[in-house]
Length: 202
Image: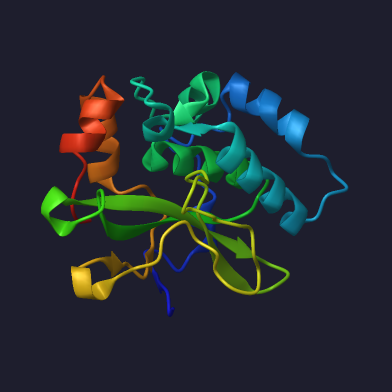
């Protein structure tokens, strides 16, 4: 896929944001635990990706009602939907000087178009050593979902079926989409939010 960039300035993909709060003490503690100065950017990215994918539960998978948004809360409560998990992965990588953006797909919410659509969030990471962006999806694996860290080919959680009006957006954003953050901040029951209120387009 040919990417389109919200900003041509890599520095914009390193900024600390309200919801990408990598200076928060709980994030800093995890940073010290996960990373060290001998690791390469690729090693750090793989460690962070697998941590968020495997150790932070997707709210729907565990039927967890807690809504998290800020990276620090995602880490604190160890759960969140894809919007929240992408905030945490961005926080961990940006803290290490690794440019990280936000990407989106429009997917069927469940298994048929009649049940509606939603926007799915993932990340894009820029590797200086490769001089290219790689998309990573830390949503969390389960039966039928097998996202992996791969530099050679994308191994995302979901493939797109254009015949069913699904869409792969090519834009790499420097900030999370405002609709995704708004829905997290407006709700307190993650399950009701997930079933009825997720945005359908960016």
